[in-house]
Image (cartoon, rainbow, N blue to C red; front, side):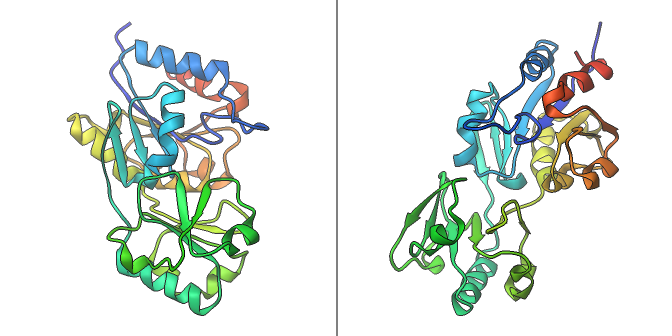
Length: 259
């Protein structure tokens, strides 16, 4: 059977992986679907909000060579990072200054690592965060860095509504204790990759489950929501498959004849 080449992009948590105690688990059916997609000549990539430095390990662990990272601002092809676009520097500086004025703990990510920088121990004390490591840098000042890729603001809802500077930046709340200030345009990185290959956007297929995946749910291509996805994403999807732990990726790929 001759199947036209597709460009597949998968979110990680809740899409490729099932939350579990300890390390997240990838269903065997998902591994088989990925193997068969590649065997049939399709392009496969991760599309994540995570920074490249934090996502590169799981990218390799899952057998991917290609990735859209940093919420669409980072692109990796054939294992090589092509570059990461930073957030608007002055907007980030303004937000940090406002947090300092309002005594709100904060952290920044000015480099491509899996570690955030914080000025003191307060961020960890407030959040008890286990998502990523924090490094205390005495006298930390965002103005000393050329690029800022992400910020982390320790506040519970609705405190973020009082942050005037936040309105100029993209952000999302994944944790009760703090918000992520990070790029939210996965479609941007997807277009860069497809353009690199001279492909057609109609041949793109994206899989997601969370609100930040709305940024890659475009009318230009096929959008598939997992059965465990938030309702907003399901409402925008072309197709809703089963949950990640119920063979959702495999079933969708088989439904459309891609495997």
